[in-house]
Image (tube, rainbow, N blue to C red; front, top):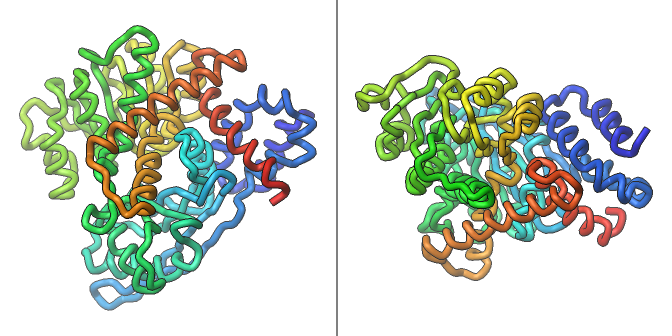
Length: 444
């Protein structure tokens, strides 16, 4: 049995109850075969793959808080500090009922390679809770966030572990958490990113993941002597990533015709009205039915269906495993040219393989949605220097990072004989840097 097969078998045995983590680990390890086989004896002796698939440490803790009726509620909090070979742990805090240890581990594992691809000195981590902010009052959210940070603050710091936002964790939640950290630890430092602009946040952070997704998609098209101008784009999601991906796509001349939330989706053949979408989702926090009511050209549909709309480019920007093999077949049948992931692992393994087999240009989330964490790292730099850069400065740095990521993953794929396979390219390019750092630092 090869070293890769041996480690995959061990990971499956050890983490049998964590399907998302197993999916992520298997996908990465399979695509690293050419690199591992070229260095098999060395990597096996150093147990490099065993170490890279095992978190350095992980925390699970109780989060008690009091609701507006005076009833005590109890949630579970998590922080997985996966790998610090190239810098302090960096990764978001997800607040969603689906959160469990396996999901946090999958996200933290992906973060190792994503953060490496940015070229910035940040390691991989992730955290969160099964708390659901939807339907909660601001005071309930504040009490939860304060209780959550009371425990989490023991394990994080500006040079140790720097969490950020994620699903369910926006500027409001980051603010409450930052205030509690400062109150308990008595220090004012860049321990969280995604902060408000009045207390250390970075301009362009809100837009970064969505904008970054389009910068790498634009570079992909340029590399194939194509342009996004005039292309039809379908986007899933209606949160931060989807909104700003839509905005930047339309700035680049494309027409985005869909968006979705947890209950349904919109098809707007005239193009999504970004300002209306922001008003519905960011200001009023309403369902997409409100968008359809305000926009005569829009059709609202219950359930799933975004991927049924013919398009040139598909941008999954909602959640993991939202685009399955049947969706992939429909997209290919309708002539899709490129699929680039704005969310973390939104495409199933089967669907990913189908796209690659059918010559669809496919860039996975490790590379395509790295703009968010890259700008978080830029926020860390501004905090360390006690400086604030302009929107244009941050946006220019973001674009340079995403363009470099595209060329790095493209070159890595070519180097190992997988030209055009950006999944393999991203995993290899991200892995090589982390592996070298781990080997240099000894058995730790």
